[in-house]
Amino acid sequence: MSNSVVRRITERAVALNKKIVLPESDDVRVLEAAQEITRRKYARVTLLGNPGAIVAKAKGAGYDLSGVEIVDHMVDENRAQYVELLHQRRRQKGMSRLDADELLKRTVYYGGMMVGDKRVDGMVVGSICPTRDTVRSGLFGVGLSEGNKTVSACSVMNTIIPEIGVDGSVIFADTGVVPEPTTDQLADIAIAAAGACRQLLGVEPYVAMLSFSTKGSAYSPAVQKVIDATKLAQQRRPDLNIDGELQLDAAIVPSVADRKAKGSSVAGRANVLVFPDLSCGNIGYKLAERIGKATALGPLLMGLARPVNDLSRGCSVEDIVLITAITALQSV
Image (cartoon, rainbow, N blue to C red):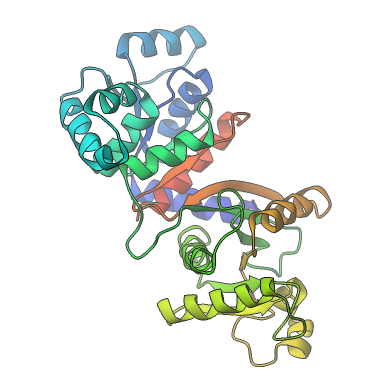
């Protein structure tokens, strides 16, 4: 990400002073990140696990956890309440109370319940656990945002073209969750990505629904799905600038937009790019990274009522620190 975008994100995080849970205290990178987040004041950190073991591990690695809250999820006073709540939520799906109790022995799921209970403002997890556990913990503990039925993901892409987006930073979606979105899901993704743009880039979103066609230049069922999703998103959120179907060049290049999509409120100025499926989104952001020299932050989860974000298992300490700052912003 551009330095200006990072600076704006971190300055806003400091001002918000949110509480974020990092449940994977078995990972020494998380302990170092907790120290660094606290030092920079990006958030108030909560770790989960046995306090004595966590402090000893941090001390052995040379890290100071002063100012970091440590909650032992096995003896926490809210544990019985969370077990019962999870059981009630999932019993129709076959989850017994014993299953719920067993699941909440895992810190990722306990953290999700804490987010849902508003004891913390968000969660950053995934340096150890796989994405499916991150998503499930969010669904089980937090649930979907109002009016939304889809968990999806976006990436903040920092390109080398400063005229695009905010100093070159643009939102790409979906880049991590839904392989072949339905029309409804694609509309959900567009609306969620608009929110991510406002939260993370701090500007009014201009959402382009991408296709290989611009305003009827070609036709296929895939194009029709984008057209239908665009109309649905516009109906659901008439306050947002959402337009499609647009080819990539028409979405971001003003001169091409003038020729191909004259009169569009989005064409030529898009700062949010919604891909028609996960194949396109994944290929698109990796092309931008590897050939276009862009850098990516994410995928960041969208669509939950409160923020839960997934880390790569190969993440750096700085990744954890910055995603924690982003999670703080998403909680507003």
